[in-house]
Length: 104
Image (cartoon, rainbow, N blue to C red; front, side):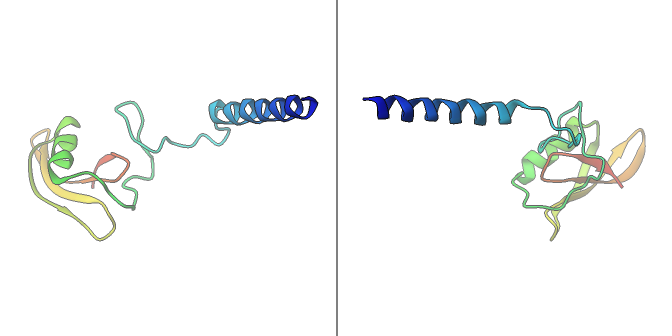
């Protein structure tokens, strides 16, 4: 019985410690894994395995304020590339796996 109490206390301590580690803020100021309208990785576009479908990529680019998205293709670095219009100008635009939309 005494051993069971010790084991239970040890497990509870381990759970409490791991949950604290998950909620602690990063001291390095890392950008989140997924871009939001309020945050974008300053090194975007970031290479990586992209799970956006073509339709999702087009929607995401349009939500960022671009129109007439054409020639949308996934390159060999995992970045969606296209041309689009913004502010009356044709620009090259990219969407990375994190959801960062950047003009190039």
